[in-house]
Length: 416
Image (cartoon, rainbow, N blue to C red; front, side, top):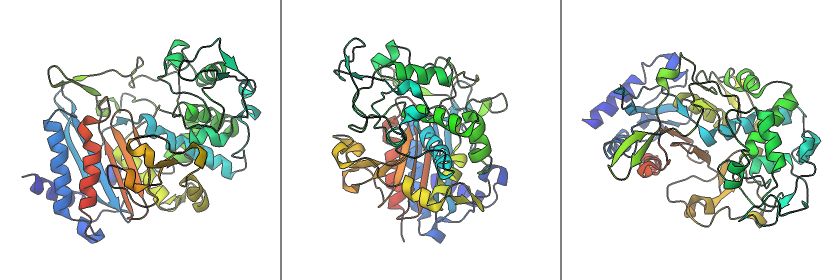
């Protein structure tokens, strides 16, 4: 039955309205060297994760050589309402916001608004005298030292600034990040709290990209939301990439679920105190965006095309090449001691594959990718010409490993 349903979906791809597929050319899997039967296995696996209550629902897409060859929406968007998962469902991107904000910054870099190694204090003077915690493992506001070196724009793009993560206990205690404060207020808070280490000495994933979003505002003279809409979302026809789900989109926003280990059932889970159906005060370039699978596929295809989509150039090809190579120095590697981070470098907005053998799922040479903390993931693989996008709404984001299994089965479906 599932194989027949997948065949119907693939046939439907040739008929789907431009408003949904947004003019990405459709094709059969076999025409680009993929197996329909293999992709059907990927669909079966996603359905098994839904049946096991790892996730409530999912939307996934695969494109190869610029052609959409797989697109499935399974399960439920909202279990309590009995609402099926629509193909144009909207998801919380969380960390998948970062590549978009990094793209905005690099558009302004192309215009000469800044240099990558500029100290950020040139534009945000509140960072000029920022100190460093004496002990990063037990940060204490009263125990600090002078900083060695300046935070540069490159440090923000590569998460080597020394700035911490939004969930760190000290940031929570100091209320550094709240969706009820403005972006300038959050940046001031980040400057007020000491760094965890000197800039450029360690990879520490955190709110650096939110600070970068404030710099986009300063360099462009526009609100981040306006810049992204005018320079990225509008030109790329990303019609559902927004900072909050207005009433016209709210009924497509996927409910986040968390598995109750005791009952084995999924229950709605509120990650944020300000829901994504309300306009937040904080317009946050690190984790703030919502989007759909099709929107993010268009963004990803623009990168795989070298910065252009449907005749619209967003970035120069050499800028794309710059962004998608490792910028973390050897002294900072490896980024982690286990899992995929041990095989990763970091570009200007992306996780960069450096050692494919350290990954627990298939990756291509030169692949760049990232995911989000409520169940989203994208990957752009120049070696195989493949883009995979998968979005669910689950916290924690692992969801029984549905994203990794999907990638495994998509790559097992490669026949040419």
